[in-house]
Amino acid sequence: MKIIFMGTPDFAIPSLQILLESNHSVLAVVSAPDKERGRGRDISSTPLKKFALSSNLKVYTPVRLNDEDFLTEMRNLKPDLFVVVAFRILPKELYTIPEYGSINLHGSLLPKYRGAAPIQWSIIQGDKETGLTTFFLEDKVDTGNILLQKSVPIEDNDDFGTLHDKMMITGADLLLKTVNLIESGEVVTRKQENEISTPAPKIVKETCEIQWNKSGIEIHNLVRGLSPLPGAFFIHNGSIIKIFKTGLVADTSGIEKENTISISVSSLQGDNSEIIVYQTKKEIYFETGSGIIQVLELQPEGRKRMTAEEFLRGYRFPLPIKT
Image (cartoon, rainbow, N blue to C red; front, side, top):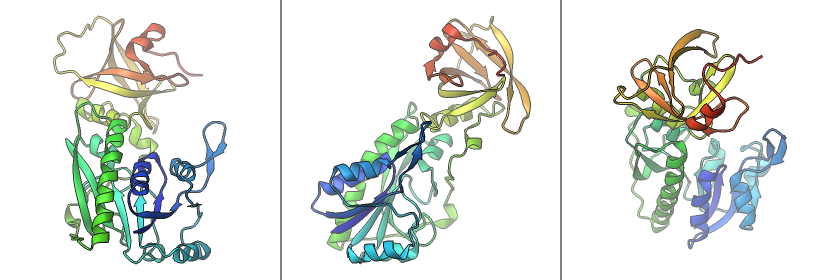
C-alpha cells in the first residue's frame, strides 16, 4: 500500500520503521514544525522528523493541516492510506483523502482513555492492564471504528517510561498487522461503546502536584505515571521537589522514627499544610492520607535526579527556605 505516515514523538518511530521494512511504500512523512526547545531555545525538529530524514523520506511540516497548498500536496501523492501515530487532530478534509481512509494507533484499549495521555492515566489510575488499539479516524477524537487491539500488562515496577517503551514496540507490530489486513480486504471493524468511555486529558502542571492527603497507593501511582517525565512534585519552602520513584510500605514497624519531623508544604493555589517525614542516614519516608510511602528517587530544584541515599549525603528535610 502507498502510505503517508503522520506523527511526532519517539513513540511513532518503531511504527514508521516497521512499515519501511515491509512490502508497503511510505510516500512521505508529516510531522510538527521545528520549534525552539530546551533552555538554550535552540531550533530543533521532532524525533520522527529526524528519523524520517535519516531514512531519506520526504517530510512535510505544515503549520495548519487544513492549508489548501498542503492538502493539494497530499492529494497529488495519491496515497492509499494515512497512518497516524501520536500526532495532531486531523481535519476531515485531510483524513478523507486516501482511498482506504486514515487509521490511528492509540495507546489504550479504546474506548478507555480517550485523549492525549492514555499511558500515563492508565498507571495513575492503578490499572493492571492496558493495551493498544488501531481504528479508523472519524470527526470526534478517538471514537472511530476499532480494527485491532492488543492487551499489555502493567507490571508493579512499571512507570510511564518503561510502559511507553514496551507499548511502542507492541504497537508497531499491531499497526503492521492492521495495514496488512486493510490491504487484503479482510478488515472487520466494530463500533466503540461510547457509554463506557473514559478520558485521558493532557498532563498539565496541576496534574503533577502531589496531594499528600491522598492515600499512599494513589501517590505511588501518580509518581509512576509521571516518571521520568514530567515528574510528580511538591512545593516545600518555596522549592519544587520532584519525586520519580517511591515504594509502598506494608509494615511500618521497621521504620526508624527517631528522626521524625513535620515539614511545611504549599500548593500551587497557595494553601499550606504540614506532613510528617521520617529520615535515616539512607532512607526517607513520607506519611500520606492513608499509609506511608518510601521516597526512593527525587530531585531538589536546580539539582540532578538522585537516590534518597545520595540526597541525604548533602541535604535533610526541612530544606532551607528559597529566597
